[in-house]
Amino acid sequence: MASPPDTSKTIKLERYNSYLRRVNSTKLLNASSKLLFRATLLVALVLIFFFTINYPPLSDHMGGGAHHVHTTPISSPLLFTVEEWAGPPGRSRCCRFVGTHCSLALKKRGDGVLGLDNFNSYYDPSLKRARQALLKRHEVFVVEGDLNDEPLLTKLFDVVPFTHILHLAAQAGVRYAMQNPQSYVSSNIAGFVNLLEVAKRANPQPSIVWASSSSVYGLNTENPFSELHRTDQPASLYAATKKAGEEIAHTYNHIYGLALTGLRFFTVYGPWGRPDMAYFFFTKDILQGKPIDVYKTVDDKEVARDFTYIDDVVKGCLGALDTAEKSTGSGGKKKGPAQLRIYNLGNTSPVPVGKLVSILEGLLGTKAKKHVIKMPRNGDVPYTHANVSLAYKDFGYKPTTDLASGLRKFVKWYVSYYGIETRVKREMDINKKSSQQTEESG
Image 1: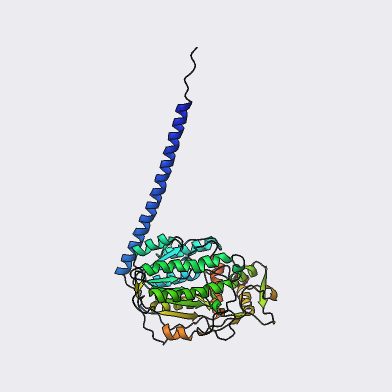
Image 2 (image 1 turned 60 degrees about the vertical axis):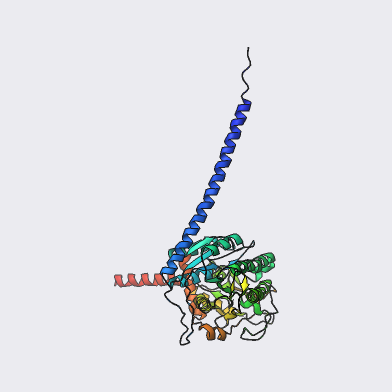
C-alpha cells in the first residue's frame, strides 16, 4: 500500500507566506497612518497660516488702564508649548491651565494659534481633554507631540513662519522635586534648550516669551520681591531649574540674537486650574469632609502667598507678547543686540493661607477640618509678594482681581464642572421651595 504524500512542507510554506502577507500589510498600514498624520498636520498648518494672513488681529494692543503702551501686533500663528511637565522628559502642554486661557484670549482677538501638547497623566487626563475640547470649539488646533521631539518641532517651523512662541511648559511643583528630581532637569532645562535650538535656526527667528517662576527668589527676605533682588539662593530644585532657565535664556540671547522675555508667575489660580494646587485640592477635600493641612512657619507665623487670578496673568502674557521685539538672528547667526527681559506677574497683595481656607468655607458653605502643622523642609517658602511696577511701566500690567472674587469664580466653575451641589445652593433651593409652598397654601 502506497504511503500518503508528505504535505508538511507545503503547509509550512503556506504558513510562512501568510505570515509575510500579514507583516507587509502591517507595515503598509503603519506607513499609511504616518503619511495621513503628516498630511493632516500639513493641511491644518497651511489653513491656519492663510487664515491669519486673510484675517488680521482684531487688536494690536492690550489695555492697561490709562497707561498707554505701544505694542506690536501678532499676525502669524504662535507655537504654544505650554504648562506643567511631569514624569518622563519631554512633556509639553497647550491644553493646560495658563496655556488654555492664553490660547482662548489670543484666538478671541484674532491671532493665529497653534498648540503643542502630549497629554500625559501627571494629573487627571480627562481635565486636560476637556480643555482640549474647549479649545477645539474655539478653533484652536493642537498638535499632540513632545517638546523634546526635535524633528517634529523642526517640521512645524518649516511649515509655518512663527513670529512668536509662548513657552509655558515645565515640570511644575516644589514638593514633587523630592520624589522625582530627574524630571525637573529633563523638562525645565533639556526641554527649554531643545526649543531654543530649533528657534535659533529658524529664519526668521521668533520672539519668545516663557514662564519662569516666583520661586527663583528662594531665600530672599526683601519685600516685595523685585526683579532687581538676588535670585542666587533657590530653596528647591524646581526653583534652581527655573533660575537655570533664566541663565540659559541670557546665553541664547547673547550668542544667537533670540529676543527672550521671562515671566515670573506668582501662584496662579482660577477656573480650569491644576488639581495639584492648594486652592484646588482644598476645595475637593472640604466638600468631601476630609482634613486639610494648613502650614505655619517654624516660628508660628502664617504662610502667605501672592495669589494671582488667571485673567490677570493672561493680560500679562499678552502684554509681554505684544511688546516683544523681533529677534536679531537668522539661521543661527546673531546680527545685532536683541531684547532680553524679565518681569514679575503677581497680584501685589499677599494673603495668608488660613484666609484662603476661610473664603472657601464661606463659598462652599462647609467648615473645613483644618490640621495646622509646621511647614516641612520640602522647598516651600513662607511668603511671596510681587512688585509689578516694571511690568506696569513696560506694558501696562495691572492686576484687578482680589482673592475673594477670584475664588468665587473658581468655585462656580468647580461645582459646575464636577456636577457638585454645594450646601449653600441646597439650602437656597430648600428655602425657595418652602417659600413657594407657603405662598401656594396661603
